[in-house]
Image 1 (cartoon, rainbow, N blue to C red):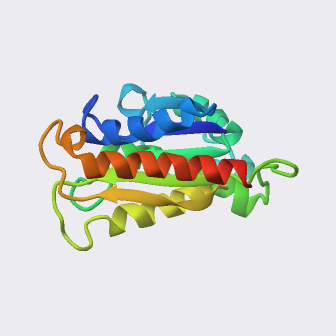
Image 2 (cartoon, helix red, strand yellow):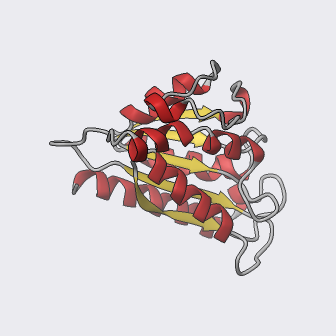
Length: 195
């Protein structure tokens, strides 16, 4: 399994990164490769809707997103991990997602798909924690992630979302949440082996 883990929290080693780290740890312990990228450490400009990507499927903005495009194409599993900010993903995550417009153009306007013949189907997963336990607190973020994965030519694999994780370090002290993360990692491995 070649997994690209996109960490969208601005807080290093916070609850979201602890969740993602648990999932990644299970994958790596069982022979998978996980490349973690902290989006807040990259220089990613917002999409300017110039329309250039409609011509060739490539974004004209020369920043760190250019390297991420090739990583996206090579990964067979992509995970986006973001805490919930105002019922959505973080700004760092959203600016990344908006820049996948170039990949949407490549897929839908230019009809160029990622070649997966003979290999595993590419899957995308969303990980999130939220301080609130509101019934719909993850709905907007999940919908945004689903459409991002579609633009990346990655099938939706599912999500692990955990509400009620508020204070710094709370996730690591929650046995139920830790167990869910490890189970989720095992599920990724199962998919990778049986696809």
